[in-house]
Length: 387
Image (cartoon, rainbow, N blue to C red; front, side, top):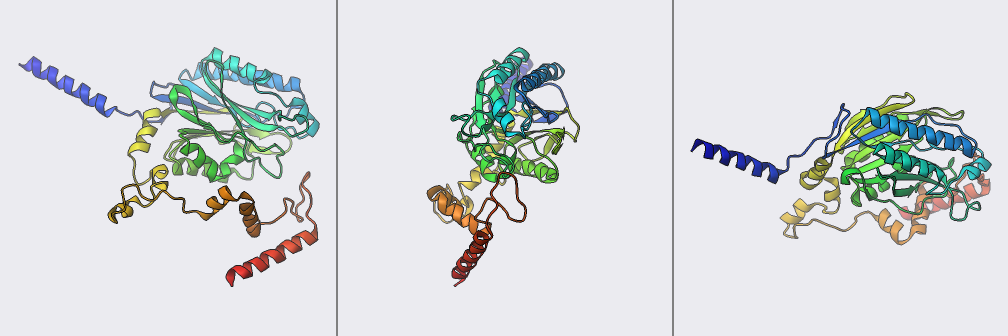
């Protein structure tokens, strides 16, 4: 009968939709989110200039108020991200840096946890710095925390690559971390200058990260370069990127803002300008990025890197997996002999951390004899390589 035919067709389409699992798309412009999208907000906080613990705690309370207010305006917000240094500012005075260094958990994270729990949202917050295990004998760490909507610290990340020669943070010792984030989206945290090294993005992505969050306190003149690098790293790692940068002037640097949320195809979903207290918000599809990584081919960089040249390898009758071995000598050397890798880098750069023509406070100025000896050594080694 006609009724039976209609029932059969409806049943067919229900089964078809279940089997194909229609994918949501990432999108920008609304205030909502869905079960398949994670609503991400990047907040462009003005760079504070603080000096005491009391000032830090007062500033942390302001950040908590922002969490509450932003959630009210963006009811779909699942995650809010604040810039590097947003909680404590940059302590240009060494004594102030040690006096305000905190623990995790600690009074600042207690405030943030309560705000996330009360607002029903996740958050990424900056602690500059976190006390070293040998505090106060060693410099603090530059640390981020990811806090869930229950107020629990889900991830603690310490900056692996401090912005030398200016930043004096102890380099991080926790590596990169991938955590289950809001709605199950896989999240990794990196910080500012970390993002100038392709290796850290790839490490996060190969660990399963679907969203890499990059809080930064980046200043002029490097605006164009930093906008470019986050977009490029999203593209080459098939990963979402959320950048929260500072804005304003702290008496030393001017911070260029341009906080952004970037799709896993490298295209920007939303980007601030240079304004203080600017926000951007987008919905990131969970099924969309997983579908991309499973089914995309010519631009599936994560798959292709470890299945190198699989088309030709298969045609040659040598299996259907491509080549798995790492073809890059630098990485082989760095893993097996890091001091040799360091020496090799010095051959094409320099052997001292200081530069005679542009001294930086806290960095020893190289002796002229050392520079001359290094130049001579490099020249001889280069000639030997050519012979």
